Length: 325
Ligand SMILES: [Zn+2]
Image 1 (cartoon, rainbow, N blue to C red):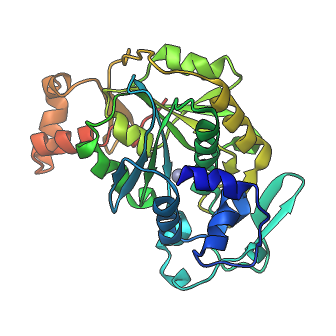
Image 2: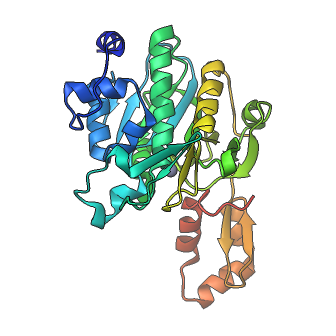
């Protein structure tokens, strides 16, 4: 399959065909971000199955893994965008006329009906596909790649994969799903970190920021560390969303150069979760026992008619969701 793909890459392309025909596949081999932005989640899902050699295919995720079985990072991207989940866009055919590219910046055209550009997370998908192309060409399979569905409605794909990930040994999860504030390079962290892993990116000029929930943090679950790298989009989930092409290229080139295969990254900080009282203050708890010892909390919950066990369990499951750095 991949041999075919490399050969096809050399051919010329036609950009008119939008259905998933052979021509469209050829078109996508070039992996122009503008083309990725025109696809629905289902079209992209079908395209990946049709094009890549995958080791796990589920209706909620697709996993690419080749080469060494040594521990290596999994790069995590999601196939849906906010547009996927907007009922008023059902049947709306996105074309390249929906986008405008000027001076390295892609944004929605004034006439587009879309809710957002969809750079979140097609920029991540683009970087992932470019890395697959790179790994196939070099034979250096230094990343596993997880393509997850329906991240925007609660990390559904990565949540399902959590129960089915034993086939792989991943030393960390690296999300390609982070905004790039005004084009900066950011590494988002989640509290269950490994400083050495964070420093890999800090030393390359990435700025540390507090993370918000994504597939990588869902998979991390306080056992395997995760970070989330900026991939160029900013003002995501709005009509003002933009995509900084330079930032996409930057994260792609950083990941091409890195080699984290075989490294060990134990989580070196205590996982914790936050709980908000109605006093508006966020309280941080490091484990359920500590939390239980705080009679004030327990009494407070009981006074509300809540079951403390149930509330604390819910709060624990929300680790990373409301993380305050
Ligand atoms: Zn996202």
